Length: 281
Image (cartoon, rainbow, N blue to C red; front, side, top):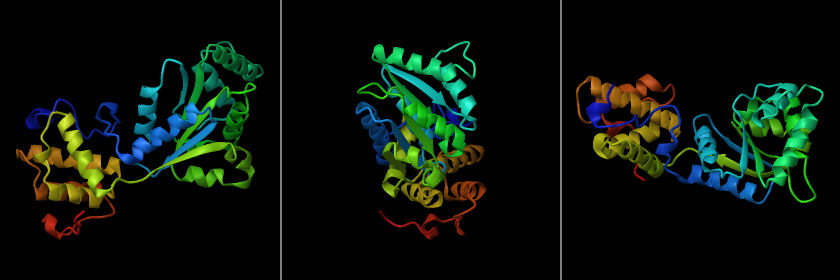
């Protein structure tokens, strides 16, 4: 594709989260710090919420890469599980074999106690948690109740869209809601953060930050609303179209086409960025 053309050794705006390109901008850094602080204090349940594309999966993967050897990770990427399926998934992640529906809870509890004696902290990460059925949330609540005289045996971090907060606000889930000790919320990037985000990804991939002009970076921010996934989509398509035109810098026409091809919301009417409606920082 366009890697050699622009001097990249990897795609700077690939849609699959790449922890090597993590910049640590305020919203993501604060979410990671919130989760780490909660786990360090031994708190039971933490939630990380944000709109689609704001970087929840990236935060989740960064946390996974930062955990120490004393952390026993249980990662549940598929939340569409019944309570029994969730128990079996946790048992599998904890390397529990030959456990049936009757004994699985006792087997998990025994495993948690054994890990605690080894001074290991069990952390369950649930992605797309807004899709958890009520029965699975109740199963998590009961696991969260398992504790010694001083410590929780299982710590739970839920990643989800804002609908997760709406679901947990329901009266019948109040017992689980009351166990949430910390909440982190991801917001869209500001203009300055968007410019830093684009520049960092270009340079960390071996390219030149001047491939996009400052005016064009502002246009990307306005069009995307500061949502990292949309920034990636627009920039990736703009680079691809620029490569197809055999140009070395992204021009206004290529960026205009990329925005119109990607977004259904904000679409500039003119091909000159000075008329696209962005404002100075």
